[in-house]
Amino acid sequence: MKFSAWAVLVCALAGLDAADITAYHQEHFGDLKYNKWGVAHIVTSEGWVAIDKNKKLLYTPFIFDNGPDYVKEGLLRFVENGKMGFVNEGGKKVIPAQFDFVFPFEGGTARFCNGCKSVSDGEHKMMDEKTGTWGKINKSGKKLP
Image (cartoon, rainbow, N blue to C red; front, side):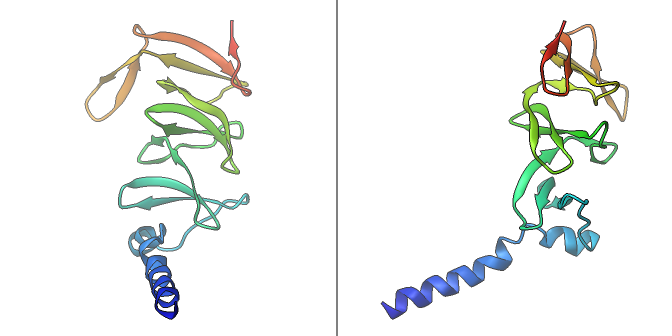
């Protein structure tokens, strides 16, 4: 009984450093910067993620201009299972990841596409607006006519 309790304690303590999702970021980029809602975008060995102050993984941000997406009208884009959706600044998923591509909100609406293809113009990629099904959503995710 003593051995198994000791083994559990040693394994738990050893796992603290190995499971520290912030270690890579701190080593390569320095201190974490949390927003006023307690969310930080950090770089791991596998790419960008968002975490809370308890180091809980919240979402994978859409990468724009070599970093996490910018907040527009209180929301930013995230990626999950190859689809895009929106989170608020507190890290809550407010519009599920359901679009192949979605632009940031402007004037209360965001343009989305499903089935669209991307085209390259050298260093950058953009969506070919002649492909796929395009539409608009409001901030609650409702598709607009």
